[in-house]
Image (tube, rainbow, N blue to C red; front, top):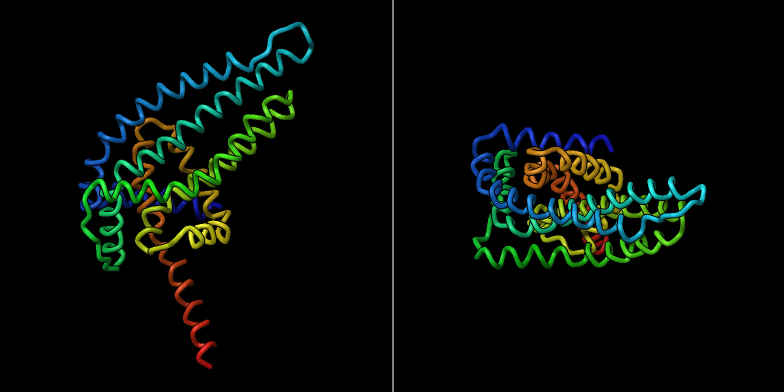
Length: 253
């Protein structure tokens, strides 16, 4: 878990420390800043709506505690929606620049990658498509968390846990999208990578959520994630190739 968190910090340091990476960063910041402001307004509205809809009133002994608990959940849910939306929409909007950033990161690591020059709309549409399967797995858990709000106290606690873990998992898929796309990983390979390195990605996405709550640093998280995941995805890709070679060798024998 700590290794994943440190990978993101390392990615941010490299992003800010190398001129060739910083030159790409400035192009992304204005778009990401605009998106962040709009989503912040949306988060406030969602939090207010949830609080007005679910927070109870009355004279029962547990009402004040339940109201506090639901207020906390409303804040967690609204922040989660904002963070998930920011990472998803941000990664789609700046997809061409993230591709270029990954290629330059690889070059710094001594690896030459061929980047296919695509129109902006095509790169964006591919990134959008790669978000579909993670979203399909995320939505049922998000709906379950909402339904659990109908159960006083315990339902709210369980809903918070489900929402938190599901958000971390979804964000992990989003962060790995650019490097995984360069490796031509399909959904099954992305899912296998996450399942085999669950704690690594839990730490990585957990650190990302923490940094996303800090004004200024939040705009750097998405590009830093692309830089920070280079080594992890490259190592996993080599393991996949090694396993394939072993299977081929056994088949030939």
